[in-house]
Length: 129
Image (cartoon, rainbow, N blue to C red; front, side, top):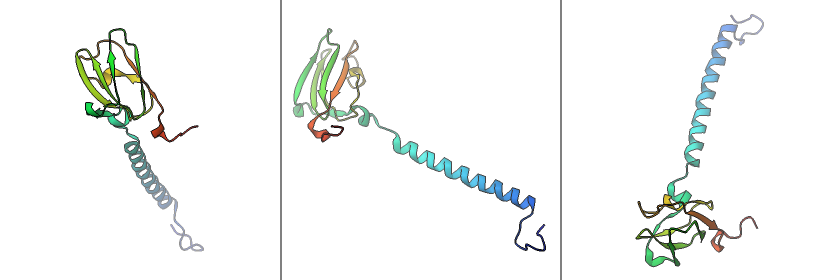
């Protein structure tokens, strides 16, 4: 009930209802913002590891043998890889973090653990120096 000395004042039940409505609005806004930030932060396979390339564009060839434990590449380098009787070329322009070569190799090409290490390159513009 509105007081006689304050004609615009809300009574307790109106305040309670207004507070609940505001909480609902804030909850919806928070969900919308978190969903937007999650979708913007989602990285694709290409963002993480790079993407297939044409063998003719390869800067060099790496032959993976049963004794190969790791390969070193430069960020942005296109490399032709020969492994398990199969060949493929890859543009290593993904995130500069180590990963297993089997993640990008054709099925059956890699039959043991081979780690890919990515070195910074001139295309990175000297960030972090």
